[in-house]
Amino acid sequence: MEKFEYSAAVTGMGMSDIGRRLMRDPMALTVDASLAAMADAGLTRDDIDGVCTYPGMVPGAGGFSGAGAHDLMDTLRLKPNWHNSGLEQAGQLGSIVAAMMAVATGLCRHVLCFRTVWEATYVQLQRTGQIRYSGGSGRLSGGMEWRIPFGAASAANWIAMYCSRYMHDFGLTREQLGQIAINGRKNAALTPYAVYKDPMTMQDYLDARIVSTPLGLFDCDVPCDASVAFIISHKDTVKDCRRGRAVGFEAVGTANTERVSWDQGDLRYLTGIEGAANMLWSRTDLRTKDIDMVQLYDGFSFNALCWLEKLGFCGVGEAGAFLEGGQRIARDGELPLNTNGGQLSAGRLHGYGFLHEACVQLLGEAGERQVPNNPQTAIASSGGGVPGSALLLTAP
Amino acid sequence: MSKPIKRPLPLLTDSNRFFWTSGADGKLRFVRCSDCQNYIHPPVPVCDKCLSMEQEVVAVSGRATLAAVTVNHQMWIPTIEPPYVVGIVEIEEQESVRLTTNIVQCDEADLKIGMSLEVEFEQCEDVFLPVFRPAVAATQNPAGEH
Image (tube, rainbow over all chains, first blue to last red; front, side, top):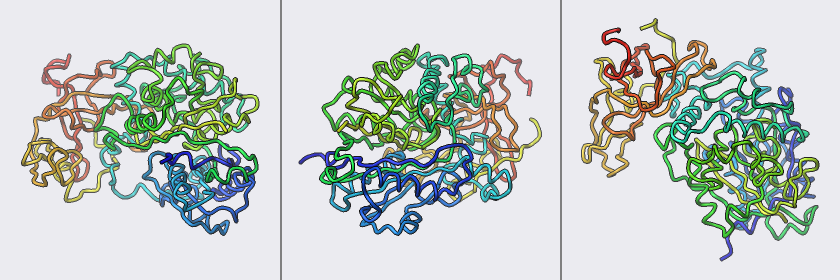
């Protein structure tokens, strides 16, 4: 039996405006991205027979949850055969895998997938009193009670502790880790939608205020307002779509083989990555040497480091040496990393930005920031610390 | 000890109350499997090793090892003033059992992954938060400072 990945393709990509404090309704962003993705695929809303998103409508989640599947279905009067959303997936890109399965099983021909954030605007609305913070009065549960009483309230703290342990065990330096942030900023200079494009030197990186040792400000991604959408289509429809060609899927990695926990697992690497990475390679004959670029989740710089290492692009504990000097991961290096700037500089598109950039590059449509020599393969990943996922994508 | 800080606190339930109130007598407690003696944390009703649902709450030594650490410099919660130290500690009885906690009474320069720690408790309302200080034998300071 042919593997299910070959049944699906990315026929359309769309983005809303992206920025800090756009002061736009998150549904407006979602509609912009969704209509753009449909137009990109040469489809109309009548062609959409599936809807899938991360995380869906999550009450009390503020700017993290922009629009639910039901909201968009009703807003655009979509009539899907199947729809799905959820926070508990294999990373944000787990929603793409769900859509792939829907087309592979024959439930759908064209699934609209989207991820909307409006974190910058939400915070501004809170500051100006237009939204009252609804949480915070009650007591903690659902896992948060084990960390927040101690002031460990942010993923910055939780991930900083892993990074401290990795540095202790393997001798990673801040300068080596900083290459991920500096590389992202360099790439973002050529990304029209990137939030931060100003040049950044190693000294700028090292001098930035410390958020939670060893992580400084530029190890942390940029909350923003954005919606990114894709059309995941059955391969048989590709010839009828606008381009007549599409980015394909070679393999997915969605396994979780570790504790689902921020403190009970291996403390050297963020959990939720290893299983996904191993599963990805188990589903393809391609190997690391065959990969032309990687778009790896960098909610924090250390996430991307963990993905690099767990995907096997360097040996155990060797990510620091791999990153040293930054040449390997540059756009014209042996393994271009986060060629749109990643979440550290382009903005927290929350997983979907990595798939978007991989598709744009594999279609040869990246303009000024195009990776040279017609890249044929890319890995996009999401997650780490929470269960993650990885996609191995192929050029048309 | 400095004056009590108003912190977000855990919702006490029948499954976690023993943990969060354990410090009332100065002892740290965990759930342990009655059949295979495996410590289970966070508390869930089944043993991850042998799937037994027979379990008991037992006091442990309160000694632990620092496994990961960060000095937080950003204010996340208005009542908790940075900087403060957050660590993950492994309890002496079973290193796979960890707590995210605060490391107290320790200069930043003296924080070392692998250092020996011992528990103390910070009472906030009806909750006794277990936090950890350098173990007396391991500290550079003269004994009896606190």
